[in-house]
Length: 490
Image 1: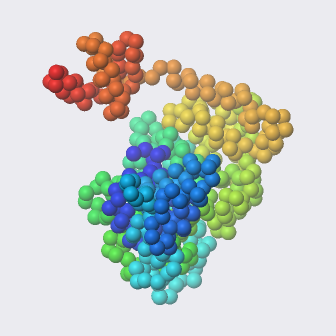
Image 2 (image 1 turned 180 degrees about the horizontal axis):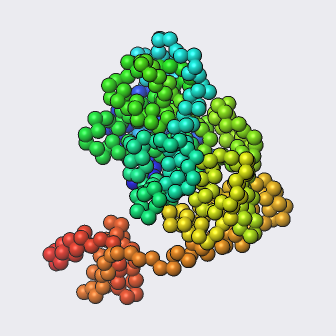
Image 3 (image 1 turned 90 degrees about the vertical axis):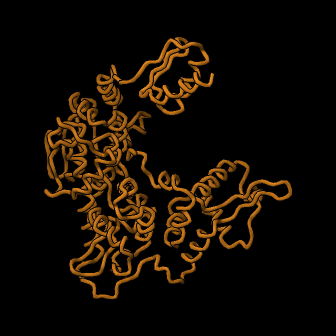
């Protein structure tokens, strides 16, 4: 699956009910799903149902919600049902429909709120002496180094200047990025690897979303590998547990099951945990402890330009701030002659700019460049779209550009620049080829409509013309078999 569509909600909604029953045996998992996955109204429903001694008539929910909020109520119930948090009884003649929490989720959430039990779902703190040098600033620097190595690999796959470490991420992480199509192999690329459209979208996400994208690709890889030796459900449960741990505190590895201990090396590669040498301790980093919270983990590429202009030092004190706590100033100035000025000194952020522009000069806190036909077409060849470039430039435009645009009632970016970026993309899209098969000359209109509808249902239909009774598909095998079965039935 493409990494673009890989979000935690999408992954969880595909899981069967038996998997959720297993997941919800852990209080940390139930608490994490409650915190991260539910909209506000759904949380209200869960809190109300949590200690009810008997099921609630479904009609009672209408009293809780205003008439204009019925759509939100339906969405909240749909989310709760898809995550197997609530059960709604079928309608009957003599008994109204009722809604109640599923047993495992209710019991585990109560344990998470009240405490108690011997489940060790929220980790077992280590009783061994802790190295005093391993503090929160150290863990933040460690996590940033690991994660920016991954981001540098994605950015520098186009052959730009490398600002990261020479080693980069581990080979297993590189293979995961390839499997998730964040990068792809290309013979014409200098490094043999090139960024994709999904990879550019990945770079612009918040760090928390980036982490989940990579983790879910990891779970998917385990599901596809019968010899992986790990259970993806137990892995997901362990990730939820890590999100509940305390930043800066040491935890005991001997309290983990063997399968979870086998996960630790991969989590070290991602920067989610730190393990000192020759100890039975592990430390969750901020990347792990913010997995199920609304706080920002590490500064993303897209927020880096803001940091550059607001004077943030990039030290550990700024890593845990939420987006609301940070100024929203941008730092990119773009002129009508396509010149770009960006106030930043981060090698990673400069490498992102180099994806779609030609950089000319670099100073201590600023780089200058220019948008050209060649730079935009090069970016488009990597799968980056004109709309992504425009959105990125508009989101990080300098505050003076934003103020001037607001005062004059104009767009933030010069219209000539926006139009030209789109025109340069259109130059590459005058014609698109698609291998496939054309179906025509049907025995009857009914046969045409039956086959074209079937092709659309199975997702192979590329084009059709009802007037000429013709359609074009990417694959034909299933349509051939369907046509044979129709003729046999007649």
